[in-house]
Amino acid sequence: MKSTTLIAIAASATLALAGCGSSGGSGSGATGGFKAPNIPMAKSLGEGEGAVNVLAWPGYAEDGTNDKTIDWVSPFEKETGCQVNVKYFGTSDEAVQLMQTGQYDVVSASGDASLRLIAGGDVAPVNTDLTPNYADVWDFLKDRPWNSVNGQMYGVPHGYGANLLMYRTDKVTPAPDSWSAVFDDASKYAGKVTSYDSPIYIADAALYLMKTKPDLGIKDPYALDEKQLQAAVDLLKEQRKSVGEYWSDYLKQIQAFTTGDSVIGTSWQVIVNTAQGEKVPVDAVLPKEGATGWSDTWMVAAKAKNPNCAYKWLDYIISPKANDAVAEYFGEAPSNAKACDIATEGFCESYHAGDAAYAEQIHYWTTPIKQCLDGRTDVQCTDYARWTQAWTEVKG
Image (tube, rainbow, N blue to C red; front, side, top):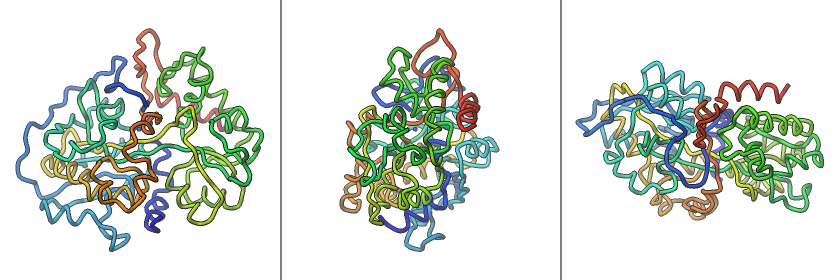
């Protein structure tokens, strides 16, 4: 694993944990009565305005400042004449707040922010005909609940990944294949279980209950009515007794597994690869129940001051070369199939890029909203604000 990945993730130690992607399985767009504001969509493009204001996760828009060899922004500027002005954000909540200022043209939105941005009228539907590289994006990332509404895309998919179950191979035997290891059986590893620190982690508990307690009627881990949310909270409160650390720092998780302070818990493929590269005896699995995960989306501001350069950026950032550069630096699967043709040998295989069967086991993070995303209309679901309150109850 390239050392630059450590820089990218360490610089954004808490970034993805406020959330990022929604449910796996087939289905198109946000459902359950969710209606997007009437925001016009671009029909054609003109000359670039000379600039584009980019709001991004750290590591998504590198211009050589952190490392002279890591720069995919400068080629874009030379190619298009659009000067890139980048503002980094640390959480999805911050991204939503910054987009509301109207100062940015594009944003790399995670799934727990995208529907909020759409509902708030902060982003516009995207005309994918104006982004030719969209044609090469994996089909299983298109027209999904976190990036589209009623079949209309609201951005272009960027990168994706799963939240895996990582464990110390010398401390956890036999090798786990179920999230039961950190829920029902968590007491076996009391004080050494690790989970990430975010309200969106409630979805992990909901996913486990969806698979093991069908009587609860959970169909989508991001569409929970009050009773279903309470069941997830109860499970997490029980797990709390065995949790040694709620992590939000990439490097600290590696350290905890290195010292043995943590022996099992949720993680990312990039962390697994890095830890293994440092000879830490760990492995990871995508459990039989499936997993949560992320799929980030580049979106265009509803009132973008530089719409032509914004569209040029969207098309460029998912082009094979740029998409591969970001994916390898950040540590995630690229969205463009052709990126794997030029990727470092073994990279796409390591991240299961393009593996549709693998991807369909991922229930990508999305914004919990009151309109039930599973299609129910006879009950109101709990929104992200309620999840935030519930997470506080879990941690005590």
